[in-house]
Length: 253
Image (cartoon, rainbow, N blue to C red):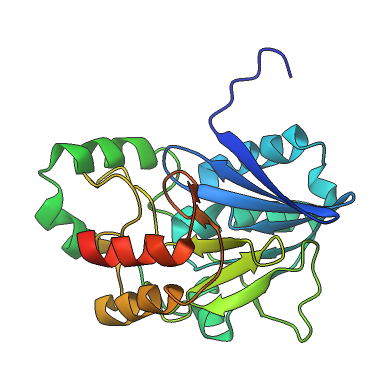
């Protein structure tokens, strides 16, 4: 749409009759899988980014009414937030690792709080990040009351395949999409973050990790994958061996 301010960038990987799109914003990413007119949404940014998610769907030629279901990598506010309002408005189900369901319903919360952020809040990068994400709803504790575990079979557009990726949260999940070409890694493996000085594949800051050692074991498990493109939860896409990206992340962070 002419004159519409766009707060994200979209890149694409095609596989047969479907396409996978990384929607990359400065603070967090989400993914669209499109098969014909049907769409699977993976994550949806902060609460304040729900309208950007809708606009990204329109930019790939779809409509939010085309969403047949959503997947969640994990229930932190910057991935779950947009799904709260969108799932209510457009009536689609939100699925995730069974372990993550209670987190998404907010029966408990595994998310960085003041005790985690205050020790690093003096850093300019952290201050700038807080100034950016506070208006987007970083303090929201609203969950998805009807969050659901993966159905069997998981039959959604784009044929996403869950990959257990625990550690960042207890039930964090990654997904192989585009016939296994692409790993949607959530926050298990990222390629940048507003508070990080590192460029390229890395483990997210320990301040955001629920279980650091389990999270690193997950990244080690990615070194066995054959995927050739990384769609991370934060940072730009990474083309090339995902296994090599995971090895680099373990070396630098």
